[in-house]
Amino acid sequence: MAEEQAEVVLPDKGCREGRSGTGKKTAPARPAPQKHLWLRNRQKWFCRIEGAGRAGAVLEWRTNFMLKMVTFNIRCDYSQDGDNNFEYRKPFILEKLQAERPDVICFQEVLPHVAVWLKEALTDYYVIGCGRSETLEDEQVTVAYRKERLNLMSMETFWLSPTPYVPASRYQEQSICPRVCAETVFEDLQDRQVFRLVNFHLDHMGTQARSLGLEQIVKKVEEAQFFPQVPVILTGDFNAEPDAPEIKQMERWPAYRFMTEKIGVTYHGFLPEDGTEAIDHIFLRDGEGAKAHCVSIEKWEDRRGSLWLSDHYPICTTFEWGKK
Image (cartoon, rainbow, N blue to C red; front, side, top):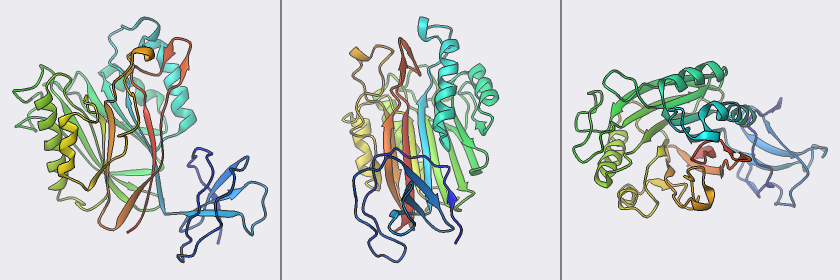
């Protein structure tokens, strides 16, 4: 069967003992080689040591679908932040995204002119989203997805409020800022896996508003009529620490696994020595016939002198789906 080099690039951290498609164990783990080459045949992903012969080269079979996703609070641009003004950060951000090539990026705090820039700069992506104000301007939670990899099957914008389809609506317990959510359903064009991805930014002031908003999101996903049983990724800026009551309420839905519980600080405000807040999160739910597994997760802590990608660390995660 013909093999192709995978476009997915994973951290070179060594391979684990795995199982082949027949259920038999593959070669045991060994010290990490100089370079790993991820290959794909029609059914599976596997890892080969560069330069090794075909026999014994396979260390671990991977399941059909692997997704590289980033959640990225890009920082609202009002020409502030001195050396970290958005104009200075733009080339740095673009360079990082081009090097990492994520399949999908969930942005928060995207102002209209920043959305225009994303559409112009990310030529390999479709960029979707709308503003949270009554006129559909102001900040948006933007989803950028790779054109040749993913097919958008459904996209719905709604507001975190008792009237979710009224633009700019909000909870009484909320700050003056409306909060919007982007719910998407994608199909992978290579492996035909369907999944739901929900990107949002919870309120920065109201604990109760955050709790109500998160509950609204989960209930909406759980009541979905369109592909209700596919895997689900909930991600964004939750504005709450892992031990906050609004995050702890996720225990009411144990199917959602807290992938970033131990990720550490995610908001540094351009002052990492003072940064103590872990507020950017990812929750993952298996599908009816698909078991979700996190292959890798990391914060992008890139810095050039005093220049940062943003005042938040983007979180990059690689998922794979296998049969239950």
